[in-house]
Length: 349
Image (cartoon, rainbow, N blue to C red; front, top):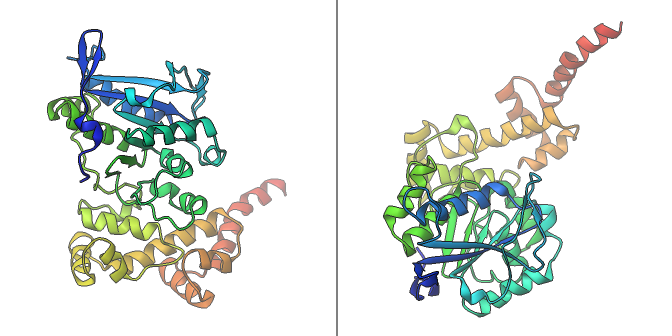
């Protein structure tokens, strides 16, 4: 858990004679993720008033921008900003909502400059989904831990060489930088802020109305690994996510254990108890299943697929593949083509 931020110690904001304990300015990037934005704001909205009347009594939120032009989300729905950037100090937090990775690469000096202005003023910054990318782009994450979705892990490393994002938990609170993986995790991060500033009862109420059973802590593992490895063991779930993010360069099991402040033998016992197998066996299965997906869905060479799945030796890859699927990668592809092309050939005969 992080230290209490400056925002937690600030005086509440007055709104028409009422006091708001939590005030948030939201910046939406072009083609932002509507789900992350809606989840975050709805937790504030439901915590802000009695019932679901949505009056901004306990919480206040405002979509801000440099030019007041509508911002189009990744699904095509537009949001009209409510105010210009102005003084960032009027908010307890500035939230940046990211979206499609291709858009993040295009710098926006007005956004980046405003984020730097907010940071200089001591306003904590929140990155939702790929909003964390923008905080890094603006040079505001040096020395901070940063949460990104497992789905965008490789994209993040491509754009920010040398940085190590956290992609095996749903959100990270590191002093005055708060980042989350997007989607439902945005609701949990918002609930964390509501609990900090307004109260636990209001945070719980919001989540329950949104049909979310309970608040999740930041260390909760992200979902995303194959269904055949479903488990409620949080240690095993986090290990599975680390494996999934390192299929091309497999990590030694002792390294995975060390990342989780554990040791190899203890992790092996957890896997045996949760999945009735070893972490090494699970890791191999995940790599082979991914290889099978690439064999069936792409035209890439077997050697290229082997390398992308962490096999340096193509012959070793072929043996392991045949042991799992009953045929070598090349044979598997030939059989698949015969099945799909056969009916088409018969129709044209």
